[in-house]
Image 1 (cartoon, rainbow, N blue to C red):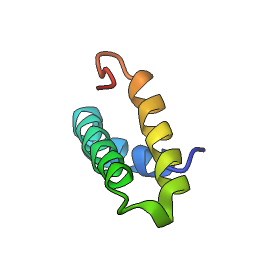
Image 2 (cartoon, helix red, strand yellow):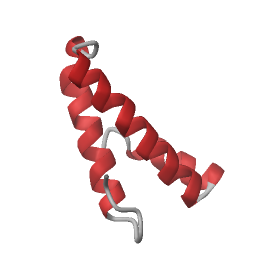
Image 3 (cartoon, rainbow, N blue to C red):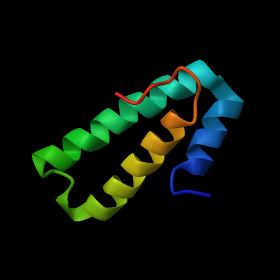
Image 4 (cartoon, helix red, strand yellow):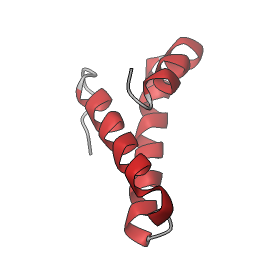
Length: 67
């Protein structure tokens, strides 16, 4: 399972697909901003891996285009 896979699976079971898609998009945006701003420099590798996990998951969801 990917770094974020367990979190995504938990949210799917608890909140359903639409809420999980919204959370993944929002969290991806937050992590990307942290990478751009330099705030996340100490966690760069983890943030990049999580962003890749989020994008991969979004691409696997029908109608949930990666933006």
